[in-house]
Amino acid sequence: MVFNSFSFLLFFPIVVWIYFIIPKKIRYIWLLIASYYFYMSWNARYALLIAASTLITYVSGLLLERADAVSEQEKQASLKKWIVAGSFVTNLGILFFFKYFDFALSVLNRLLGGLGIGIVEKPFDVLLPVGISFYTFQALSYTMDVYRGQLKAEKNLLRYALFVSFFPQLVAGPIERSTSLLGQLGRVHEIKLWNYDRITSGLSMMLWGYFMKMVIADRLAIYVDNVFDNYTQYGATVLILGAVFFAFQIYCDFGSYSLIAIGSAKVMGFTLMENFDTPYFSRSIKEFWRRWHISLSTWFRDYLYIPLGGSRKGKIRTYVNLMITFLASGLWHGASFSFVVWGGLHGLYQIIGSVLKPCKRKLTDALRVKTDCYSYELLQCIITFVLVDFAWIFFRANSLSAAAAYLGRIVRHADPWALFDGSVFAAGLSMPEFLVAVCGLLILLAVDRIRCRKGMQLDAYLNTQSLWYRWGVYIFLICSILIFGIYGTAYDATEFIYFQF
Image (cartoon, rainbow, N blue to C red; front, side, top):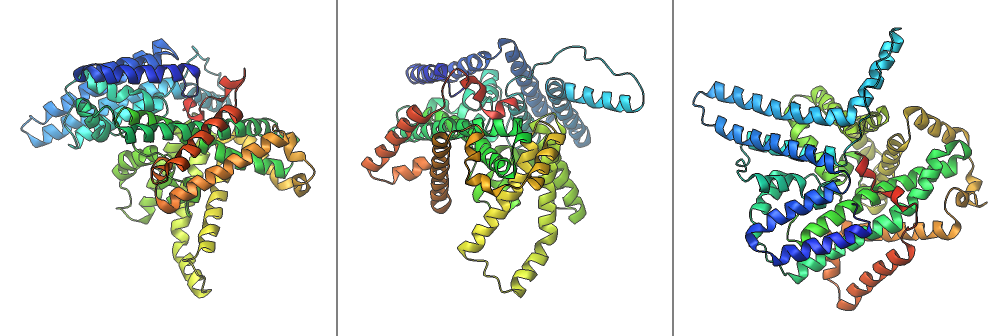
């Protein structure tokens, strides 16, 4: 079941209605049942994996708390480390088997082939369970939080199971922290059910999310898929446009899922963490990662980068820690070297930015460049976007060789006249459809600009406006989705991109 499906449009109101009328003490049990049903609509058998991850981390939390009772300090510390190691090895082992086994086997066969040794046959096919990377990382963060003493182990298994499987953010995040969501689930009986401002705010976030997904992302996907799958047929102009469109497609696609998740949770009285904050208005790669996929970037910061030493052990060690973190982030996204290169590029960007920072400051001072003006900020945003978009080509391409060939055609087949001879309209979108996509992007940039300047999500901004203006926006978004949303028999092909991760 996906958010942009008719089944979810039936499922969500029913879940909320029953949630509102049942006794307070069993609300969390109802949400747990609904969450497992939501996930089992894809593949019922894979609900066993969530249950296994839940049980492993739940028991680990209890064992960590019991280990605190051990009087001998060294023995206590050693025991707790073994418990954490067991939780991580087991959970990551499951993740490796389902997500990286085929990749590891292909790498092994390449190595064996290079040595003249026969290849290892694939013993069975493994289907990647939807959302396994997200709920595994969320469960592991609980183990680490208990280990660090940031919260007490949860005694109620059903409530903890809901934390791991909470349906709004189960499949593609945000990756919630136990210190936030688990505490809210423990106070579910205290939530005031009817709160007009909260419910309208949540619904307006969902509405904007549906606009981003169905009007912008899915329309851009038609163009992007055609260009990347047939890049040998196009010149530089269409290829560059395809890369730019993908940057906005993945932002609107993933950002829309996060907004719908946050909005639907808000309707029920829960606050999920923000996952995107106008990333394409970033003025540096470092700032980009403070605004892009925030729940994952902060997870890697808190549970990998800082434990590795962070920036506390000198510049060289800091750079090594950065590269390890970004390479791991790339591998998290998928079992492919192209994802690893994408992560490595972002790590390299940050290292180069740090190394050149003193030189940049001296140069701007020497040339008396005015750095506190809009034009300079705009230039920084453009440069950052170009770097990010370059890396996105490796992320989207089917392989490293395809990415290299794609970039090669951009360099060797310049055709600026394609902007004027109609060639850009022959790559998947007709002129009217292309113009709808461009208009959607302009609306997106306007909303993000408002947010950037005022520090408000669209729902909060609309609440500051008059009633006629607010409802005018609602009606415009609803009509746009109904008229310009991407529908049809092939619609299932445009599921949310991050489902594959």
